[in-house]
Length: 131
Image (cartoon, rainbow, N blue to C red):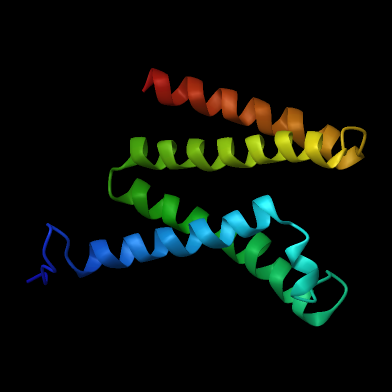
């Protein structure tokens, strides 16, 4: 039987809210102050930096794919698609704003990533609205 902590929230809900706060703060630090990476001593060429890339580019992407698969297996395809749309939109918006703010309009990577991510968001939006 779930433990209710009052205000209609059980332990699972409290844990999810805690995770939301953690990811919101962590994400906000690097969205608004990307130079903080220097304070952590991280570059992709040092061991800690390579581990960080593996964690937040690699493992996080794997975890998202697995979670989406889980949602699909629970017949929650619409919720999974909504989640993908939120994630893809957040990445696209952050890249678009970051590209403009950071002056990276002519960078090869940004010029390739922006149209691909925009197309992905458009397709996801059409599929989500149609569903």
